[in-house]
Image 1 (cartoon, rainbow, N blue to C red):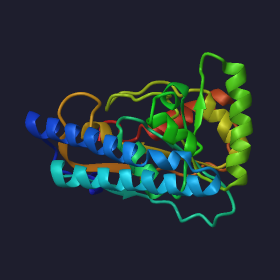
Image 2 (cartoon, rainbow, N blue to C red; image 1 turned 120 degrees about the vertical axis):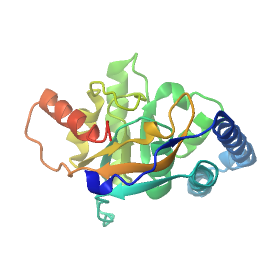
Image 3 (cartoon, rainbow, N blue to C red; image 1 turned 30 degrees about the vertical axis):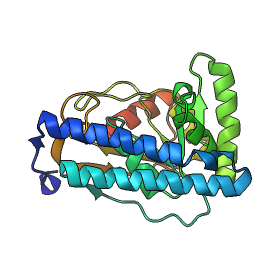
Image 4 (cartoon, one colour; image 1 turned 45 degrees about the horizontal axis):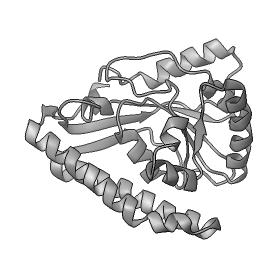
Length: 247
């Protein structure tokens, strides 16, 4: 791994970290409010326009990180561009807001599988619904599983890629928890999964100062045929998404 370890890790001052967080919140509020009339446009036109808003938000956020915090990224083992005949699952280590921004930007119109609580947030949740993301209510597991199966079938029909965070929540850099069983259910439907490891929490943590440097994101080997038990599958995914945990 030393070949890829080129980042100059440096903690930013309180001022620069706070400045970025304030500008990021203001930028998010501006684009959310200014784009909100598009939420009222029905059908495919409204769907396409909202995605322009989402892509713009993500692109500018990555630019803000670069200009204000000197945070860029390197990608290892980037998968081949898909030929639009099938969906893929990207099972991603979740340490930071960064991976949400990045995959929203690089994938065409991905479907994120999220906690229902996020879909219920005003403005943010309205955009998620319009972009046809999937929210899951963990308290009602039977209904959520049935809903997930139905929604995944529609995602596959529309040939959209799927983004899922197997651990189910944001996890601090250097730590890991067990994967949620939902990722196994999604895999059994789609049959095409790429684990993704990342060390974004080292540079853009949930709390505390940001740090300048180069975020490393690694696409692990694609899983097309995994003939093992659910527990073996979940353990394999856990190992794969944590390969950069102390990198």
